[in-house]
Image (cartoon, rainbow over all chains, first blue to last red; front, side, top):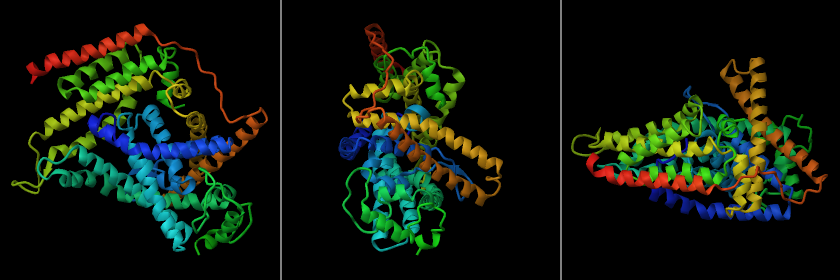
Length: 261
Length: 249
């Protein structure tokens, strides 16, 4: 759920744009550096953006029986890292505003802040924290997607509460009102997105181990990265083999048990 | 192709420069959020509708299908304004002036959305994106956006076909099957996106790819007449709002 065009007063729209700018500029600079060093990355990052766009268009059955769309921010952050997600998220939100009438141009800054900055960073933060404590990959992926989704909608509630404080109880009352609509109702959807992300990741581990290794998804400890797409070295490949428990690249081996150890 | 982009490609204003349409469409949006909702946003809403259905010749049904999406968010988001939390009359009560505030918000949002829709329904992204370089957006970001744009349609088409194939194989008959199918859909989209990027890269490398994606942009010139008329219309709307604001309050 994006904040619609014109929903925020002009001062708030500008302020959220200013707040988002440093993160987007940082993402743009790292993306530009990556593309200059490795021109072929343009196509891979563009493909990642298309994947993010398509992922957000999938219909997700909620555990309450309703239906919604995943944000894709958790999976995107785990696969492509938050700085790249800031750029890809901005591009995706721009496309959604102009191609689907979801969100808007004056509210782009606010939507970028919640969906392309806070969501990915929160999801990626919890993912790295859990992996640091050797929590199984799929558990970490679930919480990354859950936290990214929920934090996105919590920030949306804060943005709306700041724009429309309650006449009696001010910001806190408004936060309760908007939170009960946009954040609390999102909990079952966040669980759904977490489950879906785990299922997607399990299939990716089986079928696209090479890409995941190159993106550095299998790393369990902090390692220096060489670019925006997270190019991995031979050590990463060893990590991947370690995590999946096999070096088979055909994707025919059942990796579930090894991954969940 | 998505309905708004398809309409933009066959729009009567397709050959106009994006700056012309941005001045009018986005100008209306800026007016909608800057002017007092009554009567400013109401005037903007009527003007945008007249331009969309008149000179721009956007099909009414397509416009409604796109317009109801932001309206859904607006109605949901305006509901909390009707209530207040705390106060002497109870924990949750009807807010004084809540309906007026909610109505003004709905008016402002619906008018602003129409301004953006005017731009979106007349300007294909393929015309807009390459020109963003002239607006100061770094070329690598524009290249990534172009690849994302072009690949999105192919991926959406793939996803639609896969979903049909899954449905034909009873992949959506039970809740468990639906989840499995959905996960397969997401994973396949990832695999296909990267596979397509790799093949595209190999093809471009064979053609001397140097890191920049050059695309043909349909030639168009900024029309001084159209832009001046648009600015005059925006100025007239602002003036009319200021004139009418006091008598209508």
